[in-house]
Image 1 (cartoon, one colour):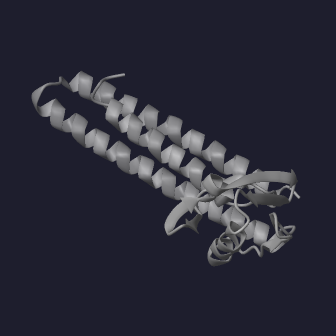
Image 2: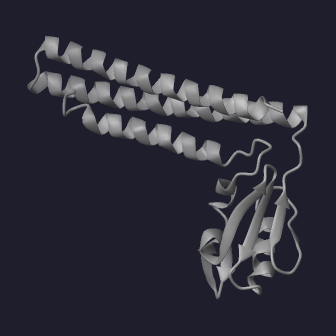
Length: 183
């Protein structure tokens, strides 16, 4: 691979990885501790990740259990969960907080599948924009440093790179949709 295309491949990898991260935050009926990754709790005036103030476990397929290191953090953690867009109501017994994930309805599953597809399409658009930028850089280099054959080879390599990452994104879309639609 030419050093001219290397930075564009890195950008494509970042787009793919960003989509993977977004997909981890879409709940598919099963409890997933990654849903809590973006949430912050007020720990002595400092916004802190849940993992830093509590032990998070999955005792059953549809339950996340949060056991704070300090019991006075229970109220703060509950506030953070209620203020988030998770749509879950925490319950506690004074020592641990439990988040119970209700079974997803068919309509909700279809809605989530549409959202997965939309995010995947946005990632593909980002890849195509990166390819366009790569082709612009190739053409610019072709005016000074490269022969026509080299320009053509690099443009083909750019297209193959784009096709590779689009195929990976299609696979991610299919996997997440299958996960969501599985009852």
